[in-house]
Image 1 (spheres, helix red, strand yellow):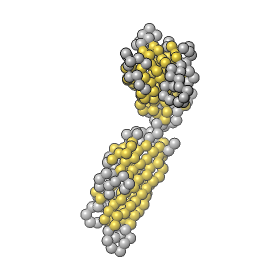
Image 2 (cartoon, helix red, strand yellow; image 1 turned 120 degrees about the vertical axis):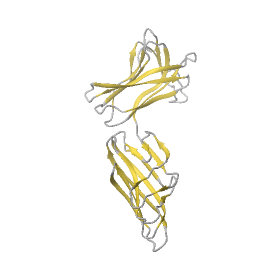
Image 3 (tube, rainbow, N blue to C red; image 1 turned 180 degrees about the vertical axis):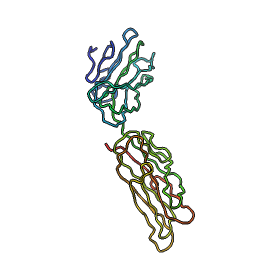
Image 4 (cartoon, one colour; image 1 turned 45 degrees about the horizontal axis):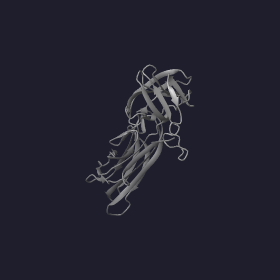
Length: 285
């Protein structure tokens, strides 16, 4: 047993340390190799805290603990976990806290997403369990920037009102790791630079008619995409339109993809399918 915590961590309260609980020289970097054994008693409650690290302005952060109970006779613990936020001078601002249920004797990844105060520039992370005996193995505990991204498409056709910029609803999710999109509307949760791509296809566009596409921020058309015109002398055709670009967004800004056609007859519809009508975006690192 070592009487000192490993580099990068500090002791909370009076705890006993054991390092290299599951050493494995044949399989480097497996989960559990070099894990930390944290022992706490009712008389001497303890926990673990990371050192203070710098964070990015206007970013969202993900905190994570890879841990498990070391005892099958008492395999579940409700841990008090939190992140302390500090300003540019290192002065404490506030703490974001939550409770994590560490269950079972198999390794689990526990954590969540947090938005720092606007003035935060440093942070540290901790967990503890006051006045309760526990023995917990911790393989990793840390804070990392959460990079938001999404990809949606239309699985069914959507009717577009003639001569009207219409939001594409994008009803099918491929992924959305921040849950930032609803009914085709992306709401920015963390200010910064973002890249967006979108496309649409419309069938039966008449001779001389066109399909347009654009990216809107709020109610303002901000990035114009293709103007796809049927240049045939007669007859209708399918027309494709694409748009992409980078935007600097503030938290709370909304982004939509809208299309416009100058058809004068019965309203036309967009096609459906992942490779035809789509909307994707991500933060720029």
